[in-house]
Image (cartoon, rainbow, N blue to C red; front, side):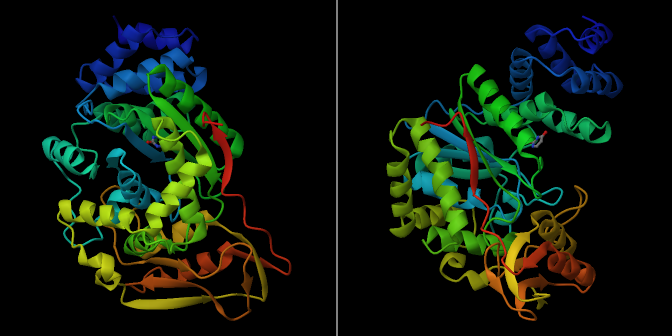
Length: 437
Ligand code: URA
């Protein structure tokens, strides 16, 4: 085979075969096909799209480009969840122990923050001592013994995604549906889960802000997962305003602990229970969503989910005392209040601006090499639909450095749209795709 022939084939609109796609991916990861040819191929895919069968072949080839986890030793049904990224989205921290408390096996691989959205691994690293870098043997052994482990993607897994993602970033080919789908699903397939729920965010703070794009992505993820023999369901959920009230690494761990204690913000608890219920339905444990949600809420109230979180943290070297004493988590040196510009009710709270403000304070990264500050972030005292009083605080910035504080403050203040009548909180779950009825 010749790469140039396959690039031409794709450029002219003909589908590539499974063998051709595998050959291209293996050749690229093996260093035999250069960046410039794969760049051209990516652009051809961006313009011509891919048939469903091609997207599935690409996903499979990428998943097999490195180590694959084999979870077949697990007695239960191994499940996984993925979020397309949000502001204040700490659902993984709650959902992993919650599902394990329910008896499902959760072998979760997560990533770090890049852009305005947070990353689960950065959040967990705010817990003193926590070790996200586990060997494959250690990771599988924890899942086998305790039913849960949460680690970062090692360099050995899905190298094709890492290489392609970097190339996409510099060739204007990030926003291609088949490339997004194969990137997301290849990591899930390599992770060994049989049942996968995907939380596709929509709204200002989402990777794809427009609902039509979120819907197309959700449909393609479900269809491609099905072709690869996985049970995949997707929910399109609101990211016009942040999830919960805390944005920033240690702040979000604190909020996750409250939620695992049954005392978290309503939207976060609801989303965790709805995502979890879908996985329970996929696993066949329960047939009724309402029943599954009630069972999960019970695990948040009776302490079993929190006990699983304690086990997860302890197993991976973290200080479990943070659970009873969250003040042991890193705390910022200063707090600055952001005041409401007028009295009224919150009509909008722009998630993108809040994410950017948290990043400016140091909670996220502008480049892959940046260090995150675990302690800083934004605490939202008011959300959409709530009353505010002019001059009274609507948010608190947790800061360690004066640098950028003024800019962050302006962003947070401007993120609040306050009107006389305000608006009702946006529906949390906009659509379900591939979910059980
Ligand atoms: N998330 C991913 O993992 N990959 C993409 O291409 C886009 C979002």
